[in-house]
Length: 197
Ligand SMILES: Nc1nc2c(ncn2[C@@H]2O[C@H](COP(=O)(O)OP(=O)(O)OP(=O)(O)O)[C@@H](O)[C@H]2O)c(=O)[nH]1
Ligand SMILES: [Mg+2]
Image (cartoon, rainbow, N blue to C red):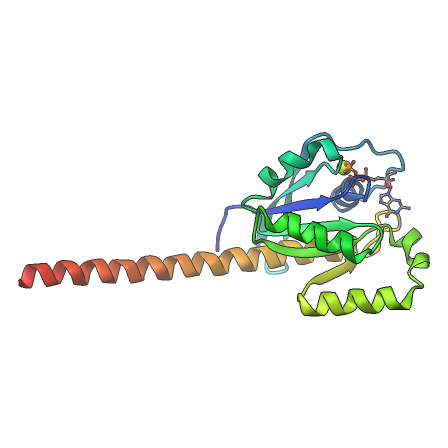
């Protein structure tokens, strides 16, 4: 319906695996010694659809280093989807991250616990798992558990984000069209009223 690319922003603390995740999706590679991101990196993605069409996405991979924190909101603005990455599933880190994202955008937030190949073994604390699940249900957050090392759930994550982002964008486009038509009707009826008087 729309040709404009959807904007997806990857957000998360230093070394949580944001760049490695998008590199796995884009190039199907895994780099043990990837360099820390400076500012942000940009990826253009085209997702082919089974019906022959395609969806274009702009993916912004932001820097997690503390010194870049002040410029991250600039990238978050105008996003349709924010992929929020964390490696350790601590509730206070997740809450704080969501608060930070919300200062810049009301985009849909998709949570991603990265490095599941190493962190899975650490989630033996049942209390923490229960608290996290409750929090996710209440906030209706979608969560993916990924490993860029093994490739686990990486394609599923990006496919979901691109397709969902496209749906959200199309829905808001239809909403805007409706508003424009409504405003036109109001304007015309005002004009008609003046002519009669
Ligand atoms: N075992 C394992 N290591 C990973 C995984 N994803 C990333 N890493 C490693 O974690 C380190 C940090 O990865 P990056 O992708 O640079 O993290 P980042 O979030 O982009 O970091 P900044 O750009 O500094 O914010 C690298 O050494 C990666 O190889 C994973 O799924 N499994
Ligand atoms: Mg990076």
